[in-house]
Image (cartoon, rainbow, N blue to C red; front, side, top):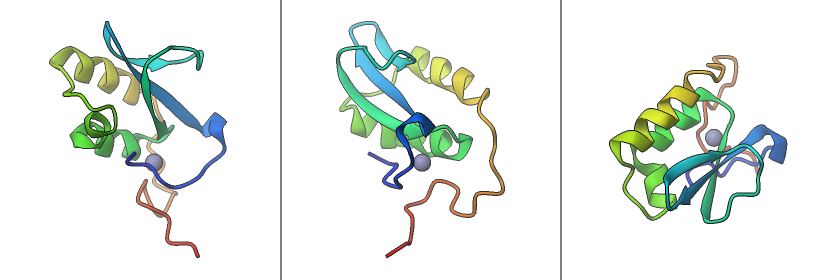
Length: 91
Ligand SMILES: [Zn+2]
């Protein structure tokens, strides 16, 4: 997955590949291959560029992209977070 930085699970959003396309799993109960992205816009921008489709082993359709972008736009753009979704350099 693109987001290897560890944050509490409640800070991460599950995305699942289902028969109806790639869906945001708000309940955490959708069956299917899933991936997690942080609830930060930067992570989603990066994920939508390819990491997410790679993690889900699928190619995002135009509809998937639109759905995910719509959700992404509701997320905070957290400029105060220095790493902006990049892999944490701690250790
Ligand atoms: Zn991230």
